[in-house]
Length: 305
Ligand SMILES: [Zn+2]
Image 1 (cartoon, rainbow, N blue to C red):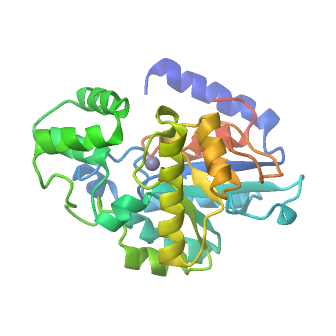
Image 2: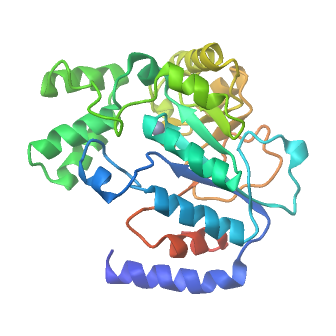
């Protein structure tokens, strides 16, 4: 981190003592949950926030110590109070490494919500951004060039992204390498979802960035995932996490018309009850390469990041 960024963070952290812990619902987004730094360094996935189990533990303890209740974004409004301080742990995509959360959820007796891209689960195919990342890393590419390529691909139709991957990296490039990169299986999801502390949400069928598609394609992506999840788990999600956080009014309309009541974005904002009908719920992101406590202090304040 640059000196000026560090200084700014310190300043925000200091100021945040003055404006901390006003009643709100704070959402947090995670992707993978890694055993340790070595697993991240193996470069099987683009680790994104790169949060290890120990960092997750620290994050949970900081919020528990500060008097927060952990809830799911699917928590019924009747159980929320306007004076309550709530935190929501959410994981996007459906990585098998998320199954590691169960031990922590049990230890602290807190819930978490997992937003599943059902096509990857069913096909047992890796997520496209991980394929780009690991294939380029093993060819010696620089991380800045890899993220430029990922950004370029995000502009394309999903089917064109897959065609691009197969052409660039070969027919087997989507196959998992390990438990780090693979999506959970249908069987695993079934068992996982039956756990009382685990909630399952919609993350579309194929991770379409919904603001880039028309209504009918959006509706299909959302409804297929609703059907998959209810077929596999016997429960129908109440909330959707828009892939990549890409919200649009059309996506919210399609979600509402698919029976969903809540939508999660990546806007760095605090939320307030009621949650039903809120299709722009904000979430914060915690980074494994920065001090966890400092970041938590900033999230808990009313100083915008
Ligand atoms: Zn995602």
